[in-house]
Image 1 (spheres, rainbow, N blue to C red):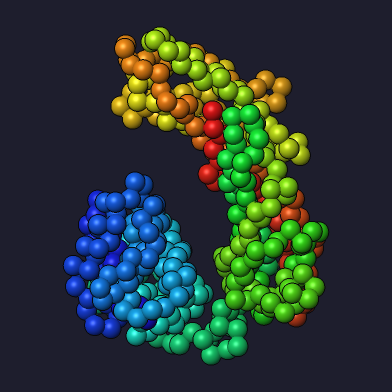
Image 2: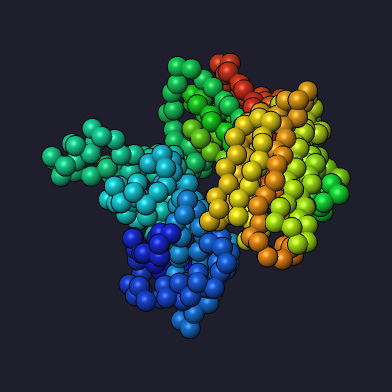
Amino acid sequence: MIHSLFLINASGDIFLEKHWKSVVSRSVCDYFFEALERATEPENVPPVIPTPHHYLINVLRHRIYFVAVIQSEVPPLFVIEFLHRVVDTFQDYFGVCTEAAIKDNVVVVYELLEEMLDNGFPLATESNILKELIKPPTILRTVVNTITGSTNVGEQLPTGQLSVVPWRRTGVKYTNNEAYFDVVEEIDAIIDKSGSTITAEIQGVIDACVKLTGMPDLTLSFMNPRLLDDVSFHPCVRFKRWEAERILSFIPPDGNFRLLSYHVSSQNLVAIPVYVKHNISFREGSSQGRFELTLGPKQTMGKAVESVLVSSQLPRGVLNANLNPSQGTYTFDPVTKLLSWDVGKINPQKLPSLKGSMSLQTGASKPDENPTINIQFKIQQLAISGLKVNRLDMYGEKYKPFKGIKYMTKAGKFQVRT
């Protein structure tokens, strides 16, 4: 299975390595560095890199490459899912998953990796179980461990490991019983210059924060479950019941977890929440170019479009941009030619616009193609796919919990061609 794990930062330095079976030399990462050099963007490195004696499987998260070394053929998605689980665990333990956080907590990192893989095979990957095995680092615990020489490793085997519900520990007690669910959707789209949609898809997740006493059994039903065609569940979900009734039935883990992720790719179901009117033109033989951009909301069910950020990579021949924003602020980097416009919230009564001129190099020919516009935004209390939770019920316990559902839509890779 997994022989070794190497963590490589954005500069290409290996700052942490862990071996489960035999020690694999660092030189195996040379194949990864070659692939990294060939890639145009950091995220374009192939996820699976074959070498004469190994396969290198990698993921890029928080500007760190997590590179797993395997010697025999295994399903790549299995390893990729494990690597993502490692990153999520680090984030859960340390608050952030950065090179500095990993180096500051290097002992806990090695303890976690030792528990998560046993002889190269995944063992305990649930956050609840790991927190009973290895207590998250605190300032007080770090000081005590330094003085006494003890470690964060727990003395008892987690109770969840011995039960039929390994993701939930036994004897959980809370004074306030709460269950919160966040439906977060990310829309990826490419819009052509006439405003038609070339491609659009939605990646959605339902994240949960459940703090309930005892061993509750929850059911979550949707108004329109048929929207969810391509779904990935947390192991706690009873799949047979979902297939038969389209109802999520599960005993939840304690604390934060991802209940499911889904994908909506049929074009007719994907509403585009913003539109862009643009006029970016360069005249042949002229050292001036025109730049006009207006944003507006579309199909947002009356919800406000917030945190709007527009960026565009202008052609190399552009020396400077003299623009006038009706709202927000803009910056233009004359070295990288990156134009950024921080719009903020879109007011439908007074649409934000950015207008002005661009200075070109004298004698430079007209750019071959117009720049593309990338947009980031957030819409609170709206799931753009139309997904709605119908009801959440609890069985097996007598108390009444506090329940809350929140929706949010944000832009993933949202691109407008000009």
